[in-house]
Image 1: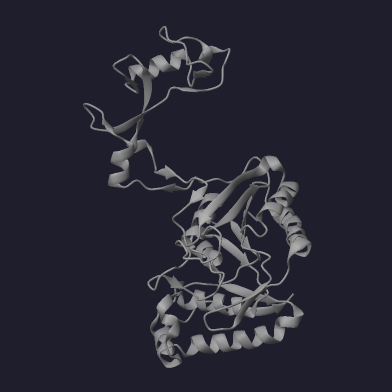
Image 2 (image 1 turned 90 degrees about the vertical axis):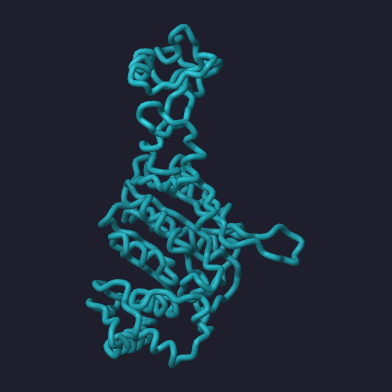
Length: 366
C-alpha cells in the first residue's frame, strides 16, 4: 500500500444525511472511545503501508490535536511531515460568539524518511510570473529573479571562507564553494548589484510552478450551484484528493481510503492510473460510489429535480470510465442488502441506453 488517505469521523456525535435524505454516516463516538477507535485503525494501517508509503488524515479541531500525538506514536515524530490547514468553505455569517469556522486540518506522515514525493506545484500564470520574475536577461530575453547565494548557519569548510574578498554574512555560509561560484559567474548565473552584492539568477523557464505550501486555500468544498457533487454530506473536493494522490504515489500504486464515503479519492485514483481499495460501512456510501463511477456527479441545483427527469438525465449521461473493473465485498451482516443493491444496479445499467459499464461488479463474502 503506497498511500492511505482517510477522512474519518470527527467525534461530533452526529448523524448526517445525503441530499436524498438517506442516512449517510453515523459519527457517534466521542472522547476516549473515538480516539481508541482511530488508534486501532492507525496501528493496522501502519502495518500494511509500504516502507516508502504515506498517510494523510483529515480532521478538525474536535479531534486533530490528540490524534496528532497518536500518529507520532504510530509513525514516529521524525516522520511527521506537515500539519496542513485547508480553507473548507467561504466565510460564514455566524451568530455565535466565536470566529468563523472555515478550516479543517490534514495530518501528513510517512512510514520512513524515504518516501514517494512528487512535489505539487501551481502553474505560473502570466500575471504571477511577471510579478515574481521581475528581471529580463539581456541577450536571451529569459525572465529571472535574484535569490541569495548564502544560507543560515556558520561553516568551517570551503563554504565558510571568503569569496572574491567577501565573507558570507554573519551567522551564514555560501551555498556553494568558491570554485563553484566562480564557475557560475563565468556562465552568467550570478547577478551583481550596483553595490557589488552577488545574487543567484533563478530563471522562470527552470521552474515548474509555485510549490504547494501547508496552507491550502484553493480546494474548498462545493459551495455554489455550478459545482458538481454527489450529495454525500462528507464529500471531498476532487482537486484536494488529486493533489494528495499525485504527490504521494505513482501510476500503478495502490491507494487506500478506508472511510471512502462518496468515493472521491477512489474516482480520482482511478482517473490518475492508480489502483485503489475503498472501504465504508454505510450502504448510502456504497450506493453513492457506484452511482459516481457510472454517471459522475451532478450540479448542486440538480438534486431537486423530479425522479422522471433524473432518470432521463441518467440515461443520457455517458459514464466517466469506459473500463471500470472492480469487485464489491461485504461482511456477513450486510450481504443481503449488498446483494439487492448490486442486482438493482446491474439492472439499472442494463436498461440505460448508454452508460453501461464495461466490466464486472461482483459481491463476495468476507
